Length: 565
Image (cartoon, rainbow, N blue to C red; front, side, top):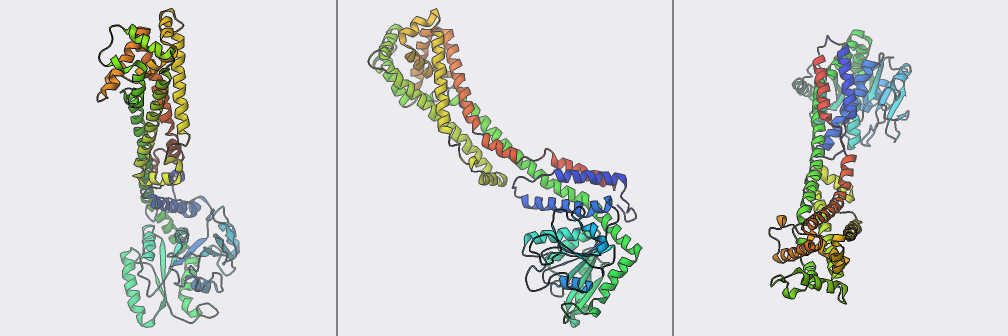
């Protein structure tokens, strides 16, 4: 955009409205490494659009706002009071001296500084020393109508919120009167803001306060060279010597050049309009670059959220797939389960080779189930206990895996710190596992009883006993030869016997179908338990979700404005 193209054309206006919409929709919900910088950029751009750009393109003439800014203790409030002719902004040794922006305006312009029009999110006050953050409004007949003076918070305040508010209020003005001192004019803080002014083509005047007469020439010359390097060579420089104050104000002679210049700017309509137009044009022209910067931060949010979501999806997906292996390779049958199985079938002749007929094995098991020695119940309990332990281990393992992966990112670590439920499995996991495994066992029992109603298997089931048959099929269901590589031989031998027994009772095809169904039912139960452990992670992702493709939407809006310019 060139200076002559001061009017905001319809394409520019439409592009600006699109930027405003996209910026308002942008969210920074994750504490990524660049979170603070992203939030600051978002806040600054939102403020610039709402505090400066939109009011000047959407409404009738607004007062020409002159912002007086500078470092703490530079004397800007004293300058403001002296320009107005009375104390309107507090001064003193307390730092930061200026905590709230103070707007001195003609009473006729009061409506322009109401919350609907200027810094809408800040409360209003008429007390310059009010401890409540907000905008202090001072009506003064001595201020020309159509012009207002803004005393900004200190740019290098010890308060971070004051520093942010200082930048925001400076960027809401048409012209800056920047106050510094002879021994602080080269500090970094002022020049960071002055370079922003140069990028936006904001008109700036520099006030050198407390300049020793003997150093005036040298300081002004050095300051002029710094301004040239910062692309602010046309900025006027006013020097104010170290003088005794008169009732807290600078002598008339010390501020006369500054007051005359301000009066001249306000009185000459063409000069004022040129400054206003140049500042607005520069601010609008700088927006595409600011939007691109914000889009980079927004993309960081999207990438962080995607990485966390992918960690949950991949870890829980792998855990779900791992369940088939864990509950099919015989590991559930180790230890106590194997000991109870051998007690159940009788170890003596079992591993020296199966007896000639399964009838004798059936007689032994039948005696164990129906006799005084009930070996089926201990086996059944051991199977359920082992299955529950393995299931609980899988649930804990996947939660630990996701937790560890999230902790490797700044965003994930922050979420875990904020949400304790992400650190461990839920307190009710133990009960949930017991209930799930017990429910599965009840289903097995029901299946066996249903099959026992048929003529084909009824006699055999009654011969072995329902409890014994249930123990056999539960045992056999946790063994799948296709997934048994590396398993202990004893588990495989015992499962092979259990499979033969099941085939004897139900028939070969029916036994295979039954065991597959029982195994799948358990895997479904196990998957539900493990899957339930991802709920806290899913909730955290949902609550920290960022709009889809917010970065690309921002870039597109910035490119649209760039084309319109």
